[in-house]
Image (cartoon, rainbow over all chains, first blue to last red; front, side, top):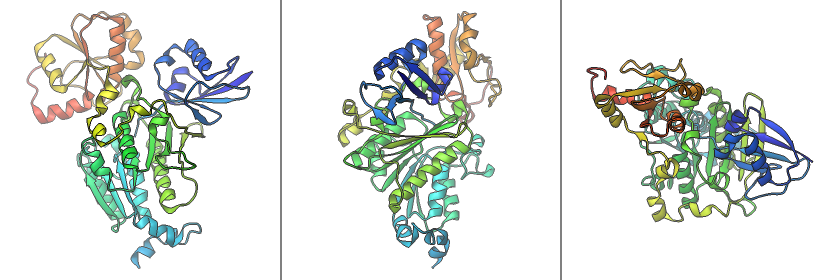
Length: 77
Length: 375
């Protein structure tokens, strides 16, 4: 089962991509663990998670075809 | 009669008209930050005929501001941002009342300043002030139009308006500020003027929609824009009940809350301009400039080793520092990151990051003393 992950700001810069497709992930906590394993710098970064365009506040189950966005804060003005 | 002529194009606009114009004319909007986001927002809101515009900024105009801070011209360099902005806005629309606050917004003055306005625009450039403004708006029950940029991306959203029994704020999206070493400003990372131009204008658009009661304001939403890739995404914000306790619950708590500590809690090795000058005078020290080679202003007042942050880790891997090290950059943010890298490599080193960076040092040294000799 495949999900699409969208990355923004410093996250996409650090990781080097603005989106990735991942398989075999069934919750947002699992997603964080998988991404941190692949991209160790991610652990120190602050970001919010949205599933299908809705910000989630706790561990959320994921289904095939879901779109998950990782949103870091921006401070520039 | 003059007023009707000035706003004719809005009055004749189907879906807007006199009713909406009259609502704008009694609205009081506070813009916090007269920079890249604040300038376009102020410009368009003055043009649109908002009743009162308040502007908060303690800064003076630099030449590097002009590409994006569109209220300012070359002749204005060195002058107060709020005073010049007020002059320009009055020239655009003399009927708008302009109030200026040439001050740093803190928890001691925020409630007093914000309470007089209907809507608040966050056009600031640092997390401390963003959290402070957000919390003040929650306490005062003021809608907050949020906007922020980095490199080629921006975010914009509307907080603190109830819709469908939901009222979210900045802390529902980002409950805690990030580590200081990831908090970069436009001065550090660079930016194209068009980006804050678009986001600041979008913030003004949200203000107009809310006051006039038209369209769909971004209430409980965040819109992200990527200028390079032409991508826009809209996200719904949900309530974060777990972290709400971090927000001051009343005026007394707000006055005691230390926003600087909250954001910069790990950085005891950040030194003041005075401490830096003392170190240079009294100790053998190695000064490292972590800016990219083409950044200005150039340092001529003392010797500094240029090790750009982009290659810092590799550069220092072959080095061993015996003196005290002071790291600096443009405004004091990247040098914190470099400090962390240096400490990782050489844990016992005595090393500091210069608060405010070379920009503040240059201003400070110009006004304070003449350089006699180099260490």
